[in-house]
Image (cartoon, rainbow, N blue to C red; front, side, top):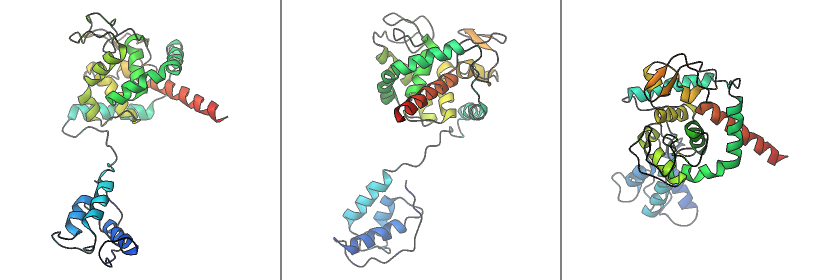
Length: 281
């Protein structure tokens, strides 16, 4: 629903037609929209409407054009989950706080981050079609891929098991795929509900939304223990230790040696910035 700042309404000068009267009527309609959509106002103010209003001279055709144009503009997205989703909102809020305070911590992760930087530079275009088909940003897909299998295109994005074979790690109950892209789309679509709860699309850049999707993708085991997710935060100052060393098996003293999703995406962002700077020289 589109909202516009109101100016003082002007009375339409006559029936809608080419010329000044059309512009005047349309401007008056726009100025009258303080708390309603174009479509609602058009129905109320156009000829035959319930009240006739201050722009009764505007034609139904002009009202319809204005309605379609304005209602096509969507309001800004709120990535924070609905208040009814207490767990989702808590996960998001925790990640929002961590993202605001995050610094990259390369020590101990240099090989991981440099390897991913090379991978992103070489293969980033391969992630874009999958992003377009799933509504998950390409950088996030690449980071998940790196976490699951160090970017191996011969594996399932679901859990890093080899393509063309029955999966042996969670999730196991998936179809057998032979192409990485098809498997990736299936894996990401398994988390459609998470994508929708944070109002994500392929262009989303909100750090808390990206972190929340990644945390749900891996599972809420860390959240349930009140710990930052190694899967999401390893390689940043928001993580020090604690890792699931196997499905369902947690070790509080083990430090994850893989870089987490947020460190990986920050690295990809630096690669893109350097490439853009080089193009501008």
